[in-house]
Length: 138
Image (cartoon, rainbow, N blue to C red; front, side, top):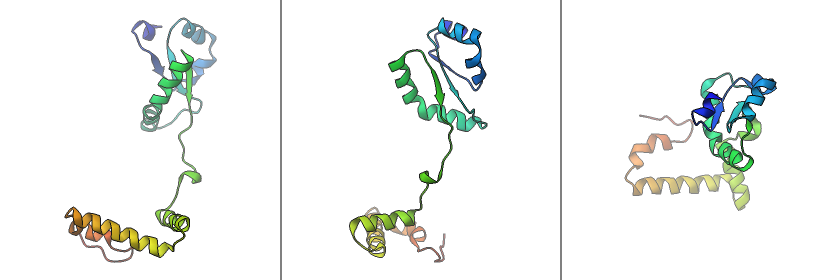
């Protein structure tokens, strides 16, 4: 109630147990506050706050649409469907274009080299452009 009195729009809390307390929920009904929390709280505060910031536009949209709310953020974890390798992506591109992976790789390298040359930066990145396994000098 103090946060509402101070003009806050929402509170972020890692204490989800409050949502199961009648007194807390009753007091919340007497405010125009929204509460943002996690069903499975994050142990790492950097991850937790990063997640709040990342979801902030969506949180604001939902509160505008639904009014004062309790917003439960999802657990921030990657899985294997959110992971890929650049070599595999080159193969997919080649397949979509009906060309060999080697051909796509050579054309991409040529385009990158030409772009760097046009900017006068080819020498700067020459070591980075070396094929895997080639000795890179810095």
